[in-house]
Image 1 (cartoon, protein in one colour):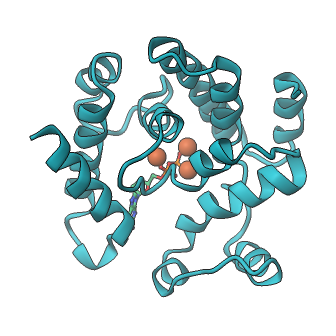
Image 2: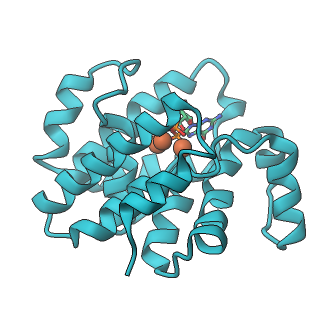
Length: 190
Ligand code: DGI
Ligand code: FE
Ligand code: FE
Ligand code: FE
């Protein structure tokens, strides 16, 4: 059994103020979506609380963690090291916060790119990350926040669509997982 308040207290030491506030927003939004879609609420909160636990680790240190722990790093991730905070985050959640639940670790792993055929918790965290109240940069947020509570798969599609549009300036910059996720949810809703 885990204590969310204790974990938040520890996280505070590893995240800057904005990232902590974002994280608390994702925890709450994950709880709301869990209630809406019948997922165990506290497990969703734990995943949301820890999803960015590796966000403030410098690139060099993330690469070292991967090397030391035999976590595979793709060439693409080596060139876009910010993507590594997701899989390194899952490692940190397990090793430093004692999370063993593979569903939670997987939700942390896939929260940045998404992937094909995501589990309910993976979708909850991915979406909560995008729509939590402190996020304000994405377009159409009001609309996407509503869709999140109406249709999770459609919401995945809308977020992936806008993410690809945002990354469109440089298609070389797009991870395969993001493209696969987009194609999957695009087929699913059409
Ligand atoms: O860590 P957060 O900022 O809370 O959120 P996140 O981990 O979901 O990262 C969001 C950013 O990741 C957003 O600016 C879009 C970007 N992103 C998502 N998929 C890809 C990507 N960036 C690149 N370069 N390639 C991708 O495939
Ligand atoms: Fe993140
Ligand atoms: Fe995200
Ligand atoms: Fe986040």
